[in-house]
Image 1: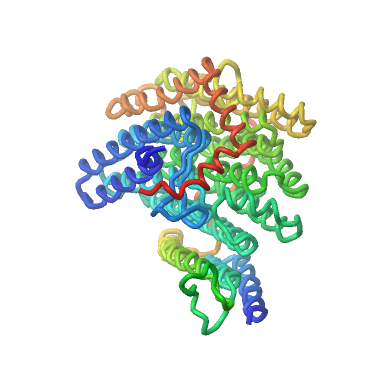
Image 2 (image 1 turned 120 degrees about the vertical axis):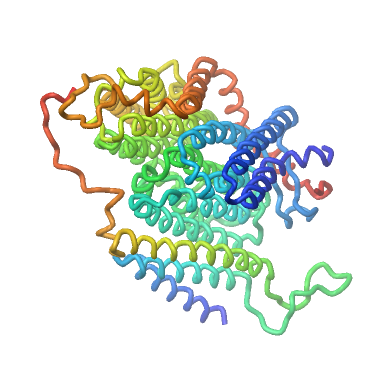
Length: 512
Length: 127
């Protein structure tokens, strides 16, 4: 490996943070900021693509920051999972940025929309690409502080209320994570994940290690919106700008799930009976309660928030089963969920934009005004529920298969039942919002004539952004084989992390 | 020294949990602040507490002779203090804004984003 390949790890983090700083310098010049924003996100996507191509061709890649020998220095590292998730995250972020640009007013944009989005993407890429557990905490905080800025952008009362709950509970979660990391360091004397794996394996299993593992589960589970700690999500995710909701739903919970997967396959590869049990039950409860919450909800945006929660359960179920096939399913589902959560929040935002309400009992007959939105919503919804041939179908097939092989019948039942409930939810909201006859009396903001007009201005770009994501979920469903191949490689690397460890621990001679 | 600090850490955790369970947003935020400080102290103790032994290694040696305090946790805490300070500043401003626009700091009364569910309306014309 030459020094240049090591730099591939740095660009996806460095480019957006530079662009973010540059955009802050251009404060007040909203058009310049927008331009820098798009340039930064595009550059990050290209960097992530280059990194993924390299990792796919040559295997795991690592580079030690500042040239400190492993395990003392902080190393960035990418295996197929980290590089793949960075790639899909940056791709979806581009679509969301187009939506954000077309959906926001110049005042909202000049409030720091693009600098904050770039900072958030820096944190997301950093979390995916670090192999140092304290560094992971720092990237969590980077995403957190940028998300705080984004969630209050606009400053409506509803947003302030949602932001309080979001901020307090997420701060609590990161503090718990810090406690877990501090205790783990006290026990092992290292923060490098590859080194941690070796040190933890040597320690006698005991109450101390088990409680640390449980602390990781609780704190990261809170970040990922796992039962019983998900209540902050439906309280907050529907309040900000639709594009910000889409960005949060696509990426933030997935970073939590990624960290759970990383910690519980690398640091605690066997886990403990207690954490395994707790994870399985929490995953099942998250799937079912998320789906039930969505079914009971009348606000379309909150309904979508609950479906995000339900998806988290599916991913964690894969981790709880823990076999290679189950991890494959979990990783495929993360990719699917990143796309579909963003698409559904965009669609919900467009419904509000064209009809002036998010109440599915009040809305009706939108199909007449905006048929393309109806089609996009239906496709995204069916993909969410796991209807073939859309992308949501395949990971569930693999998960059910892996669950049956592993004898985890409770999780299999939960996956199938939650899929059924989500199908009901999608059917119900589609039938009410789009399909039923418009009732002129019951719908004061009659959509049919006004809808096209409201969407005429920046509407074209909104349509492209949503269309691109729906197309992506359709393509991933029809051509699932390459995704399965990538997910399989990522899962087998997690189960046999030798090359990743070698890359991380043998980074002394590579210096930036 | 360590047992004493350990007891202090425990007491701080107890205080923060008490404050976090309170219904007032101000107390809740204070609870977060106490919790983050307790965490910093916890990591500090985990790196050993020694006096008058700087963490220096004599030339030609690989490890220090005397029992020294591990400097790395102190570096970690420094990072964590800066982060928690900035986040705390944000949460304080947010609390102030919440008070200004919602006119309450009672967490039970803050239901703008989550209105109480409407009574189920059974309407025959639905679907």
